[in-house]
Length: 118
Image 1 (cartoon, rainbow, N blue to C red):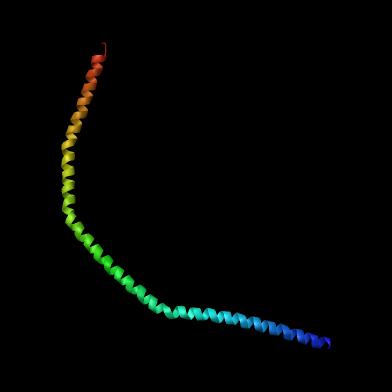
Image 2 (spheres, rainbow, N blue to C red):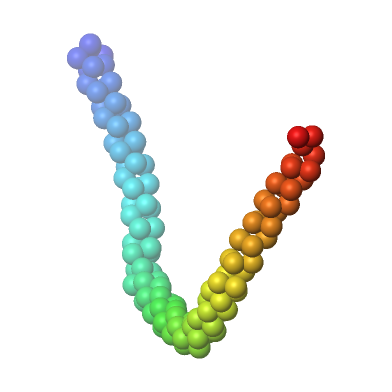
């Protein structure tokens, strides 16, 4: 066999190895694409389920918000009454607090004057 024949044989073997490697790679790619195909086929059903659940959740949320608003409307007068009671108690206790502070100041002055030896 001449050098040309050996070279052609080596090129043929290399081509065969490359062909086998490409076939294996393409087979793996085909498996991946089959998996993607199955996933894509299931996607419309899954999206329908998700959208149905989301719609139900939004509906329940609207009902809950409506109930909370109704209860807040019911409680609003109570909050106004508590506010009025707080304002009245503040108006009543402010003069008493001032009177108490003034009495303490007067008592302190008397103590200072009584303790002073002048």
